[in-house]
Length: 326
Ligand code: F6P
Image 1 (cartoon, rainbow, N blue to C red):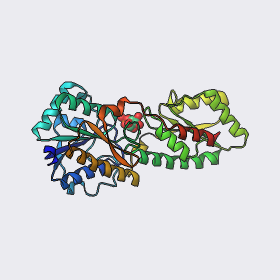
Image 2: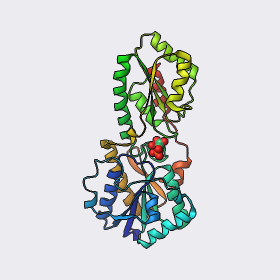
Image 3: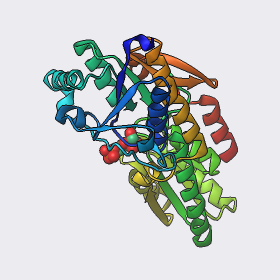
Image 4: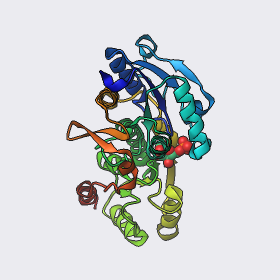
C-alpha cells in the first residue's frame, strides 16, 4: 500500500506565491487520509540543509488556507546548488525517515529537486508555485491568478488618477522573463499598450500609437510593462518615450505587492487540487515529476521538461490585446 511511503516531507522554495498555504494544507490532509505522516522543512532548501523541521498534522494546517505567503518560509539557497549541499540534504531526509519529498516552487526549485532525485535517489514531486506562470506542464501556476488580480486592482486605481490628471502612466508588473502577468493584466485592465519579453517593442511605433491616441482625444494612457519587457523596465521605456514625445508621465513599479495578500478562490482551489494530487501521485508510485493541471485535468510532467521546454505566450490573447487597443 502507498508504495512504501509512510512519511513525506514538504517544503516551499523560491519566490513565495499566494496559494502555497492552501497547497500545504492539502498535502497534509491528503496524506493524513492515507495514514502518511508529514513533516515540514522550514525556509526552503536552507531548512533541509540545516535540518529545520516541524511536524505537520491536520491541526497544524487549520486556518491557513486564506493566508498569503507560506507558513513554512522560503529561501533561494545557494548552498543547495552544489552537489555537496544536496548530499547533506539527502542525508537529513534519510535520518528523518522521509520516504519522499514534495517541493512547492518554480523553475529554480525544480532544478534543485531534479538534481536531488538524480544524484541522491530522493523521490520527489514538484508542485508549480510561482506568480510568473512560466512552467511547462500546467496551464496555470499557483499564485498567478492572485498576482494578476492584485495588479489589476492597482491598475484600476492608477487609471483614476491618470484620467484626472490626463497623464501617461507606465506600470511595471513582475513575471521574471515571462509576460503572462502583463498580458492578462493588460487585457483585463484595458491598457493602451502591453510590453512583453516575448514580443520585442519598436519604440518609434509605440510613440506613434501614444501620440495618435492623444491626438484623437485620449485623456490618459496606461502602458503595462512586463519586467524584462523592455531594457530598463518601465523607467527605461518611460525615458525613451519622454525623449520623443515630451509628455508628462509617471512610473509605478508594482513589485512585491503582487506576491502578497490573500489568495483568490481560484488559487485556493488549484492549490488544494495540486497538493492533494501530489500525495496521490507519490502513493501511486510516481516520482521525478511535477503535478499540474491541463484542461481541468491533473497531469504529470517530468521535472526537467517543466523548465527546459519553451513555454509559448498566448499569441491569440496578445493579438487581441493589440486589436482592442490600437
Ligand atoms: O519568481 C517570482 C518573482 O516574483 C519574479 O516575478 C521576480 O522576478 C522575482 O521573483 C523577484 O525575486 P526576489 O523576491 O528575490 O526579489
